[in-house]
Length: 549
Ligand code: F6P
Image (cartoon, rainbow, N blue to C red; front, top):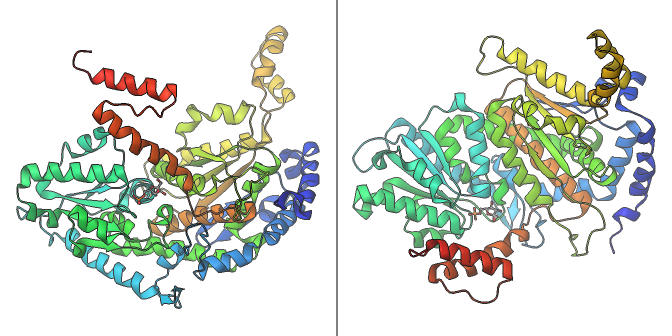
């Protein structure tokens, strides 16, 4: 039996929640002119305004008590010091060590891992220099112009989101990402590429992921059609993995493998060799700036008191809405086009980490864990799904992310972008009362019957919470801090919910079943073990492939 919901802090929060049935965000702002100063904080290059949330000082006290009671400070120490906190896989969780390779020794099974990290960074550095300078040549003697990263999940989303976020920093070869086993993605990516000037990065922690291996084999076949000679593969294929045996089996020389370790979780791996595509795109110096930005956030997370700790405060606000307001989703709304893919990456970081329904001891939880993370770049979303945020019936806490200065300034574009994000946060919080709406309609000269008919549609309930994160501009350094912030926010929530943030057994069943179904599709013979729906759909696929169909 788990005791979270019976704990004193949880019960006190349940009672305290009632206060917000009587107090709106508008009222909270009206009562306290210092609310913005009181509920905002700085961590490294990031500033968080969390004043537009349903909280008071008492809320924060109770939430930090909940975190204390869950043992958060000890868990943070345990993570940073390399204890095997990923208990179901008996692994340490040390993506933080990757961002601070010159730190004090960190031991895993008695071995200091910091020299290993630096050694791989140095190998990456030398390789990146060779490719970017044109020293590294393809099989016809021409330099590399295009890099294709083949990976999926954490071996794709982290690097892809960083490359997309920093277009102005991408000064190296063009970097493409192929993740989906839908052959269309590989086909259309390769369509305009020259095999003689293309470098493939096969990125897979396990090197057993079916989609990645099939894409890698198809990429090699495409390359061989032109290259002809298998000895040329060495100049055009490198691997990023923890699994040397499988890398060799695929046919990549381990000298062309950049290693990482089982204490780096897939969705936390962009900081490791998995970041090679990033380093090729933006250069090693900027890759190290990305690491440094994350490291600043690590330092803050490790040392700031809970109530002034940005990932802790954001994590706890998330818990507050999920467990005490019934929120089921969380929107991430960056006002920077480059951060569109960031949302997809944080979706994996958050949902693969917190989508659990048993505690560390394997007991069923009797509270909600996790939320659906979704979103996209503003202002686009304003013209698509914000309607539901403003006037829908569900509570959707949102994070607005704003680089204060644009790195691609163009006339008044950035000013208009900023005006919009500020307007959205204000609109969600303030809403528009019936009285305010009526005055507007009167001013527009509408008749009383028209006003009566239209008024309910013109009211905005408001009282909808949001955080606003700002940074001076989006650079490798600030992006590093932003990524680490969301990683740690997720960990905080996992600790409060007493779940394992770092495993992902929930992805296994689908993989197992796909391994059974694929041979059935190949042979045309059903195993008879399927439910009627699956069997019926298999038959439809087989029929569609029948030439006589
Ligand atoms: O299936 C889920 C998953 O294991 C993710 O956790 C991981 O990021 C992704 O697949 C890719 O795994 P790999 O890097 O081993 O190919």
